[in-house]
View 1 (cartoon, rainbow, N blue to C red):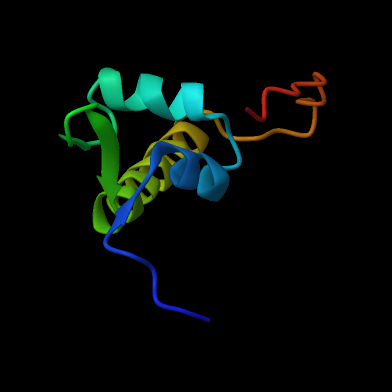
View 2: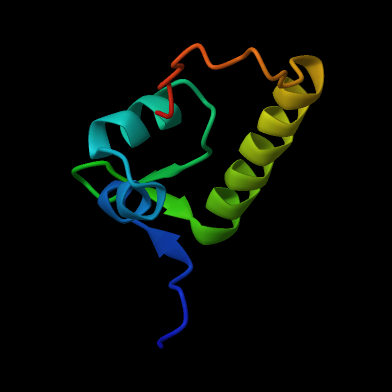
Length: 83
C-alpha cells in the first residue's frame, strides 16, 4: 500500500470520511478543518496530518458527548442520527 500523500483533495477527504465533497467544503469554510488554497483556480488541499487531527477532535467531542449523556436501558428512542 503506497504511503498517504501529504496533501489531499476535498474529494479524497470526503472518501476517507465517507461523506460528500460539499460537506468537506463546508467544514473547510467554517474553519473546522484547516486547508490551503493553491493554484490559479484556488483548489483546496487538506494536509493529511490536519485530517488526522480533525478526526481525533471528533473522537474527543463524541467521547465528551457520551460522558455527558450516558446511555440508559430506556434510551431506545430510535435515534438514527449517525451522520
